[in-house]
Image 1 (cartoon, rainbow, N blue to C red):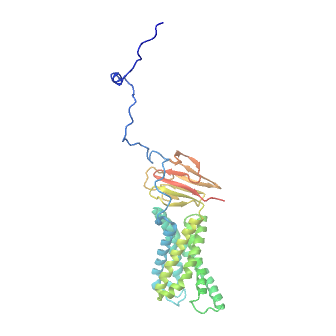
Image 2: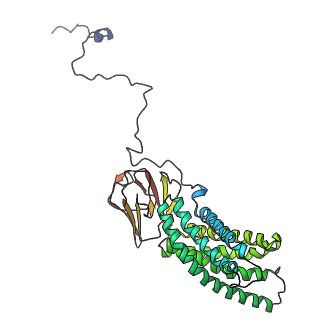
Image 3: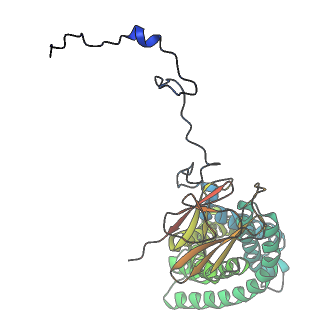
Length: 352
């Protein structure tokens, strides 16, 4: 057979340019540049990360708003009773002397109950808690005032037996601080009662006693420095109220074991401590966690339930955990729960 002397077939770009495109074909084209890619949004992608870091505004910190409430409540009680208060008079002789301490406790407790609800934007809850705190404060105010006077009398007697002869001696300051810790206990107890939580009351009592004790111990030094009796009482009461509220908030924060931190929504930066076995979430103002300004949230949208060491969310409306829709889901530390425009990071204290 004769050798194949045919030349190899060569196809040039000019030849390809003349080939017509087949109908319905999808030719490969060079990648377009300058076209932005779409990655979705938090509205369409429930797993999108939260827009804020886990740090709260000072105005959303319990120690701040409870301390401010205690200060304002104490000053209000002083302003009401001071005009009828006379140094040296006994309770019963002047109504100002009778009411100044029970009034202090009552208005501090009203402030504690109302402030937390106002921070959460629930006016209805604030009115309910304030209305409940008034009778409780009056009753417990007189009871705890009686107990505190007994403790203070014992403290003074012990100090006198030790040879103390002047109110400049710190022993008397300590005696007042111990006695006034009782006032803080009353404030913390009422704070837990209006919040419908035994654990909240326990934290409140501990924090209230610490704060009021500090305030009581600095009361006499302030009186000595201020000179005027009325002014010294105003400053002293204000510091007692502020110290009591601030200590309650700090103790709550330090001893909490499970909580929800709001990472998105109007309350971003607020933490909700999970005190109850069932914490309700919804658009109803009396819900434990009130979610407002979102028409897609039901009045009773979801609940976080604690069953021993197990914490789960039970949703009646649309809710997502980790980007997936849930009806009932056990929560793990770090889980992101999303309801409407709100996002919550579930946290729990590590157990050794």
